[in-house]
Image (cartoon, rainbow, N blue to C red; front, side, top):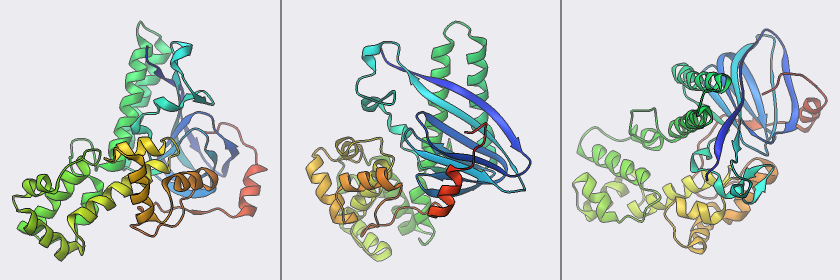
Length: 327
């Protein structure tokens, strides 16, 4: 029998003035949805300024603190954990989490900007899950599990795609702007959409070209003209960029990450990752677990998230400043 997601708590809090959460390591999964105002979350030594329309995702094992200034802010907060119907289903665990069972849709950034309308939609899912859990009607655990999964899958899609109902990846939208209107720009957009849809698959350049209506040779010329690199190199960069995002969560092994980006052989994946980022994937993942920040890559940069380092003095102040009612 599989394991179910449990909502440990959901609440909405308005803070009128100065507010602070002391630094601690969390053992469960926590999410904060900013409804109004501004604040800052500090996760593994990195500060993430947030405002209305932002979501903060705190994964198990993260060192976390938070604060806001005199202006105050309003946020919704929730805590989650898997519930194991049978002890044998948990398998190897880390503070109660089944390591082998972590789903791909938990590969989320620490901070995600989705907009106020999407934050309202996400909070509506959590309110429904909380209501079902409090009512305790027959099969409520299964329904809460379904709602929690819906919540996280929606976040996962928002992290990689623009919004539910839109089927164009964020990566493609980010790269569309320099392209001219016309057949070449449309061909590049179609090619990128195909690539990002199928990163976990071993597809051929002929398949990519077919989606654009061009020959492989002509598609290569278009890529070289507008991007300065070949389609195969672009595909490799796309795979490695997704792999770096997965590895930096600390939730996925190198082998699991390799399969998620279309590599059957983890050793081949490791060689290509090191070629792009200058370090082995195990070192990248290990560096993230120790410092909360990846090593500087020598290949394509990861998306910027507006975070910056927290000073040692400020970190010490966070440890010494207690407060109740924390996310």
